[in-house]
Image 1: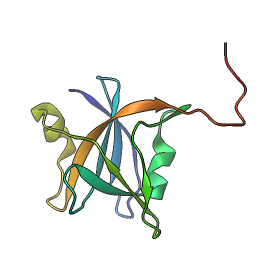
Image 2: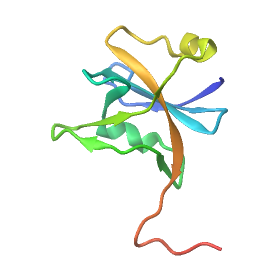
Image 3: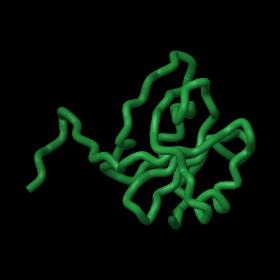
Image 4: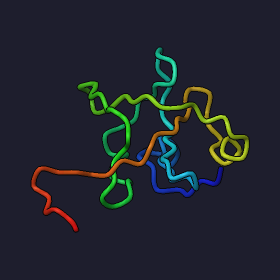
Length: 108
């Protein structure tokens, strides 16, 4: 799996980080939680999503500036080598969703 860096929301320029994959998915690197395949990310990370898309996973607002989300764990060795994930973090893969807003003009 090849990853394209989209951005991060860290004070030190590191993770949590958002990537687009060549599989048509997002790979999201975030803080580990006590729930399997669930990570925590700062609200600001979603500003790096590609235009007119969203994370194809349900975000749960923690009430303190972060979301949790659940996805498929990243196991691809090429992707893991690129991620260089610290021990207190992990990465999940989620579908790229289409942003559909109530105020959007219908396309087509």
